[in-house]
Length: 186
Image 1 (cartoon, rainbow, N blue to C red):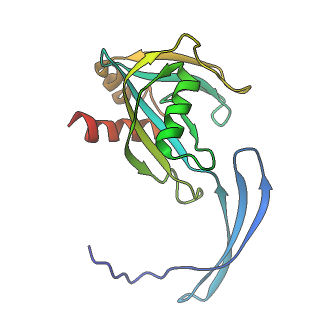
Image 2: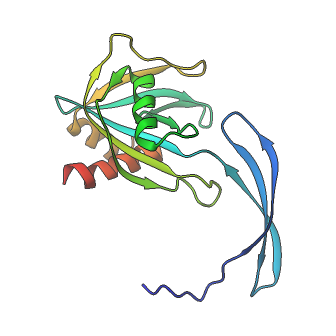
């Protein structure tokens, strides 16, 4: 694939905050297309970067969480994760989120991939951390006020079956499992 392209990059003319919440901002960017000579507003969500953790026990099981999600008005099976705090690196954030959400701890983790969750409307990056030989803590999970989760260990065979039958529908969980398959399992 050639580095040169015949498509034009839109020129950014302005960026305005429309709404701010605890975890994201709705913003408007005004862009101009140099060849078509059109100028339009486009909306996007500005969010901090995220981290998702693939935590594997000594027995080889992967921990998943099930929690209620307001966007789909239903429960979702996911890999643990969350927002990277200012000044945190993805591995530190991943191990912290994993500990808080599951009550399990890992001595270390490693970055196995990153992706753009939805570049059409989000400007952040999601990082994927692998944590091996995770162990339960006596203190258990430490959820924030809006969290309540079911924590389940999945064998790789069951996990594969659930992915194939679409029982796991969270796109970032699926992306994390893909990185796990290519970076750890191969």
